[in-house]
Every structure is written in structure tokens, then in C-alpha cells.
Image (cartoon, rainbow over all chains, first blue to last red):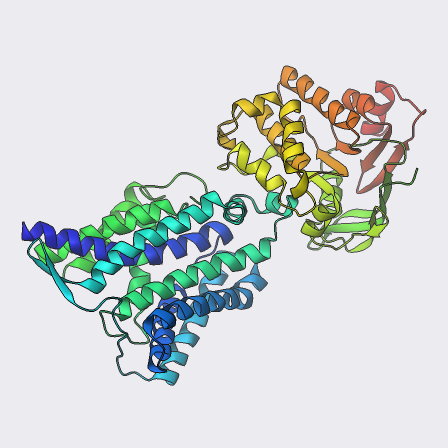
Length: 291
Length: 237
């Protein structure tokens, strides 16, 4: 019983974090058709900005939303500086991999210079612990498990129930036709990056609340988010969300039965198997498009 | 009557390839305008330059008294010049309802959204039956109706149709031609690229033969032509 509870809980928790990360990657891919390798750095930067604001004396309830909004701005600026100028060039996918990697490396080392290598921690969303089904869990983790689906549902509502969300989905499907109905395609690209960066920043704040932060804290979650989007298919945002939870459960089960040491190898096993059997991802349709 | 659109000495192309060589034409002085000519000679490129998808290298494009050459597609849509591109490759995973909402995205079209939706449904009753269906699940003819309907939602002051009947079955094609005639009778001036010369002769009052990126021949109202003469223009003898 406690084994099942532990796997269930671990899976929900990890899945929530992966979903927050993977959705941002998918959002940028579907709208702009590029892969953002500075996504992990967004996560780190969100956490450090939140830490800095708390350190300056702001209460967490104020500091966290500010950090998320600042991250939206960071995402917009990054898009305008290293992605937008390259759109329309040949080999855009590869070129943007390099420019976002470069920007990510710059920000990572910038964070190291500003905040130093010493590990930091930000306050938990809710302090304290509880025991559920024989498993001891922190209320912070429970809060993440509850909040993440709400945020993802809100994103889904935004994409599917508002005119601006409709415009984002349209750009994802046909750029020329989007121009011809008068959409501001450049601004929508910026918006996609801004949303992705805020979600990553929020994931960073979640992570900084239960694990020590370092300037390289985003690279492992980015890797996991990559596995998730390859596994689930990147052509929609619902695919990566389901895939994130599946991968979360898989990881929790592996850690429980085979130990942490084997988990990454098994995860990559799943990745390779997916690429061999169903390279477009298990939840993918054949075309690009949000929702 | 002043022309609503005049293209003056436009040169445009892709990269180092120039497709349009100093092309000039006018639309709206005598009614609808038809463009015809062999494939690959610049008709679609001309339309892309007019609607702002392609920045012309030189020349003026005057719409309603304003030079719109080099302006963004969004600004041009905002001014009421609406372009339905070739091949009905719209938004495959959006529903018809979504496409209509997108058509009414520009601030100019927003206040007329309900009234234009009524018009589209009256013109294409078939679309109302499939209102919540994804565009990819529709037939070619229905997709073309969605393309034209979306453009009508943008409240056009000038409507450009690029080969609206391309690849359609004869029966569907006749229906669509009748609908295009209806749109024209509703008071929206048209520029139509079409391979079906009979349809162009019926729909338009002024014809341009576009060849090698320039206007080879202009046919004004009153200078009616028969099919044979046009064929000889096409094949150049």
C-alpha cells in the first residue's frame, strides 16, 4: 500500500514539474517552430529572482508573482534578441538551437557571477509536513501537485476560449494565413516565449522551495522536459502534459524498484524505444498545432 | 471612377531572383479585374506583394490613395484589402467558427462581426451545418468556402482571390463561381486570378494577361475577346 502511495505521490509531483517545463517547450515549438535550449535557464533565473526578492524583504506571496512577471519580460527580450532576427533564414531550427544555447550559457554564468556558487533555498509555498496513506510528504509538494493542474487548465482555457489564444493557435498552424487575417505575428511570437518563460520560472520557484538552488539547476529539468516532449509528441500542448505525468510515474516506479541510480538509464531507454516505434510521439497527431 | 488599387512599376522577387519586372496595373476603375496567364509568371507573387507578404524592391502600390508598398500585412488588412491565397491551406486544426472569429480579428472588422457572419452563412449555408468541425475534415470545396468566408469576415473593401476554383470538381466549381458572383453583386470589388477564362469573362470587366512578370496585354471593357484569341495569347502566336 505504501509502495503504491509513494509511487503515486512521487509521480504526481515529478509529473507536475515536468509538465510545467514541457508545456513551455511545446508552446514555443508549435508557434514558432524552433526549439528553445535556454528553457532550463529560464527556470533557474525565475528561482533566483524570487530568492533575491525574498532576500530583499518581500513576502513570498508578493515576490513569487513578481518573479513570474519579470520572467515573462525576460522571455520576450530573449525572443526579440536571439530568435526573431533569424526568422526566415534557412536552417532556422539548428541556428536557434545554437543561439538559445549561447544565450542560456551567458545567463547561467551571469547568475554565477551575481549570486555566486553557494546553494540557496527559497521559502516553501506552504511550510510543514503531512502523512498521507503512510507516506510522509511536505505540504509544499502537495501544493505543487494541486496548483500545477490549475495553471495548465488556465493555459488551456486561454488557448481555447479567448481570441488571443485563438490567434496563438492560428500562428502555430499557418503563418502566411495568420498575416492575411491581420494578426501581429511578431507580437504573438513574443507572447509564446513570454508565457513559456513564466511557466519555467514558476517551475523554478517550485523547485527552489524543496531542493537547493544552483546556477545549473535548470539543465536536468530541461533534459527531462526534452524526454517528455519526444515521448509525448511536441505538436500539441496536451500531449506533453499527459506524457509528463506518465514519465513522472515511470520515474517514481523506477526509483522505487530499481533505485535512483538506474532511473536515468531507464528513462533514456523509453526515449530510444519511442523514437524507434513512434518517432512522432505517442500522443501526437501529424501536424503542428496547439490545444 | 478612380481606381481603388493601382500598382505602379513594381519590381519584386525572392532573394536574388526577380519575378516581377516593373509591373503596372489598375483595379476598380471598370469593375472587377481578372488576371490570367501561364503558371510561374508572377501572378501569385504580385498578389503577395500587394497584400504585404512580400516586400517589393521598388515601385508604388496605391490602395485608396495611400502608398501601401512595404507596409506590414496587418496594416494592409487593417485598411480593408483582403487576400485569399491559393490552395485553401488555411488553419487545418481550427473549426469553421474559429476561422470566422479570426477573420474578424482586425479592429476595423470587429464591429461588423455579427453582420458579416450572417452574410457568410447566407452565402455558404453548408458551412453552418459544419460550424464546429475542423477545417482538415472538410472537402476541398468546403475549405475554399471557409477561406472566402474568413476573408468576408475581414470586412473587405477590395477582395483578392487567387485561383478560387483550383482543383475542384465541376459541380462544386459552378456553385463556388455563383457564390463569387454573389459577393461581387454585394458591392465588393474583386481581383481574381483564374485559369478558367470563361469564368473570368463572365465575372470581370477588365483583364490582364501576366507574362514573364509583366503585363503582356490589357483587355478593357468593350474589347471582348473570344476564346481562341485568348488561347493564342497564352501560347504566344
